[in-house]
Amino acid sequence: MSRAIATTDHQEIRRWVEARNGHPAVVKSTQGGNSASAGLLRIDFDQPEQSLGEVSWDEFFETFDSNQLAFLYQDKTASGRKSRFNKFVNRDAVDTQDTEEGSGRSRQASGQDEVDAEEADEDDALEEDEDFDDDEDEDEEDTR
Figure 1 (cartoon, rainbow, N blue to C red):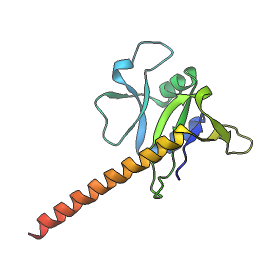
Figure 2: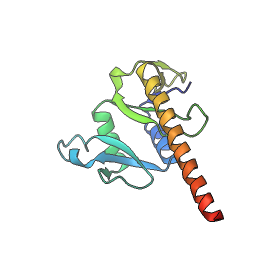
Figure 3: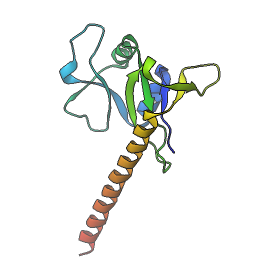
């Protein structure tokens, strides 16, 4: 079973995001509404999504902290592949237990968050199967 981890540690969040070719972003339609907030935070991977606008790490973490958010993420899928599952949650709403002695910043999430992580595993597996099927189709065309 895959587990989701909740953290507020800026370096840990940045390391996880950049290891997956991601960057901090906000939903464009929510930008500029509040001086203490860049907008609804998201992580954008690979090709930029049209509905998202890239922001600096400083802007991202200012909004992250001012809104008392925690970053919920998964390192690996159930099959052992690098996972991109992530979401932002209220720090007070995350049911957690400490996983790193002394720091108290990284925590193992439970309950609904594990269900979300498992669903993300299933979605990743489906996408991987679709990619595999596409590759097989291309191989068949090459041999004709």
